[in-house]
Length: 412
Image (cartoon, rainbow, N blue to C red; front, side, top):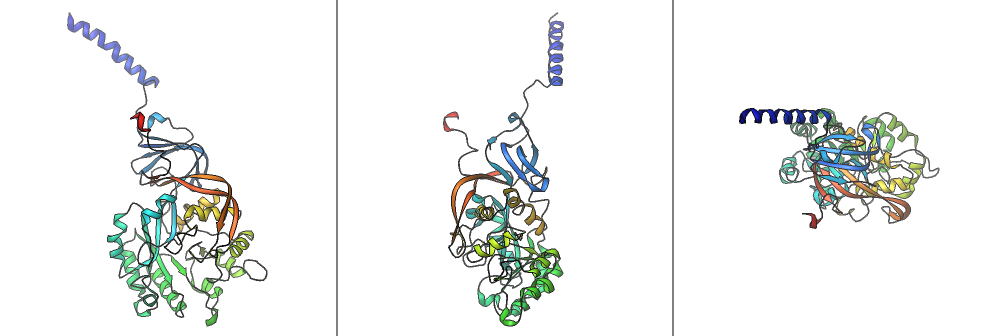
C-alpha cells in the first residue's frame, strides 16, 4: 500500500505547483545581471525622457521600462534622483602620440565617457603600435581618427612633413581596421595647411570615412573659412575647435552675428565639433553663437595634459553649454547619438536600445552657483553642474563614486 499512498500524495503537490506557476505567485527568478532603478533616463535616440528602470544582461541593454521588479536582477542600483544616459562619446581626445596624451581609464571613465576617439595621435605608420600598446589593453572603448601624417601627431616637424602624407596608405589602414578607425585627422597649423587638408580629404574619399579638421584661417595666405568649409570639406566632415577665434570666422567681430558661410556649411552637411581644449573655448564666441542658434553638432573635450586642469571633461563641457541656454536633453543628444552618427557607430553606440552595448553614465545634476572658466581663464557663473557618479562599461560598473553598487559591510 505504501507506493499507492506516495502516489496519492504526490499528485496534488504537482497539481498545486502547476497552478501556482500559471497564476504567477511563485517568486520571480533573477534574469538580469544589473538593474538601475528609479533614475531619470535620457535616451534621445529612443525619445526617452522620463523616470524608468534599465536592465542589463551580460554586456547588453536588456530592457528599459517604467518599472522592472527588483527580484528580476542579481544586483540592483538605486538611481532615484539621478539621471541615467547612454555612455558619453568624446570624439576629440588624446591618448597616444601627442606629447601630453592621457591614459583614458584614468580620465574618461570617471566622467561618464565610455567611448573616446583619439584625434590624430597615430598615423598609418604607427596605428598598429597604438592598437597593441593601448587600445587592446584598456577598459575604455578607444577609437581613432587616423592622422594623414604617417608618423602621427608626435611633433610639429613631423606634421609638417608633406612627404609623409599618403592618402592611399591612410585609406588602406582604415580598411584594415574598420571597427577601430572612424575617420581621418587633419592637423597642421603651418603654411602648408590647405595642401594637408586636401590630402586628408582625399584619404577620406578613398576610405569612405569622415575627416575631422583642426585648421587655422590662413588669411595671411589669402585663404578664408568660406573656401575651406564650402569648397573643400564634404558633408559629414567635422571642423573642431568651433568656439575659438582662430580656426574659422564663426562670429562676425563687429555685429556678433554668425557669419552666413557657416550656416551655409551646416546646411550642406558639414558638422561642427566643440573641441574645448586648452585654448579653443572662448565665452564671447560661444555666447554669441549660442544666442544666434549655432550650437555644436558634437560636444567633445580635446582632453590632454595641457587642458585637463581647465574644466574640459565631458560633464563640464555640457555644463558650460547649459549655462549658455542649452537644455540637458539637447546636450545629452549632442554627446551620445550625434557623435555616434558622426563616426558611423550608430545604433551600436549612443543609445540604450535593447540589445545595444551596455555603456551607461549616471549623473547628479547639482544646483547652486558654479564658476565655469573659458580658455582665457574668464569665468561665467552658472546655476547647474552635471557630475558623474557612476559609469558602466560593457555591462560592468567601472566607476562608482558613492558606492551605489556596493553592499553595506555589515550586511555581508
